[in-house]
Amino acid sequence: MMNQKKYQNIIQSSNTERYEYLVRKVADFETIYLIYGRFWQISTFNINGTECILVFPEKDFAEQHIKLEESKSVKKKGLNKFIHWLEKDKSNKLNLAVFPNRQNEVKIVNASEFKNDLLKECEQYE
Image (cartoon, rainbow, N blue to C red; front, side, top):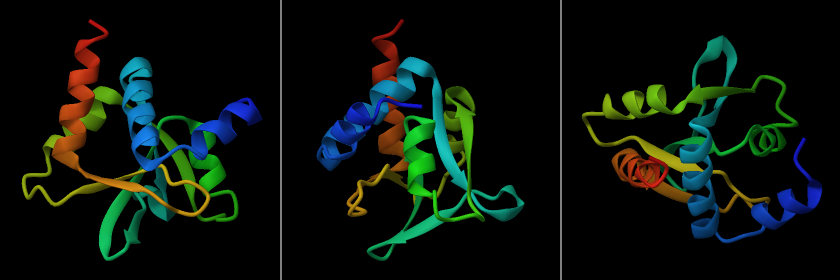
């Protein structure tokens, strides 16, 4: 379990700061966390009229987000599989919502933009 002070500091940061944190963490640990509903389907969320998939850098953030929703669960996905999955989106309509804060404020990014940012960050670890 993450230190509560660290959790508070990160969750209270701006949408852009949380996005940058997510990109760094996912590139560093080569994992990302998604929310799944029943029947192991990735949950989508409508945020201001935009259909999105929530993504989280660490399991604790995802679990806190769904703690009152018994039908939801958190699943870890490896970075390579996740990037491959993003590349399947030929329509370029897949949007990702970077882990929301307590007020459900969130940065929404297109899958291709997210993939490019991740790959740039990964290059720094090589």
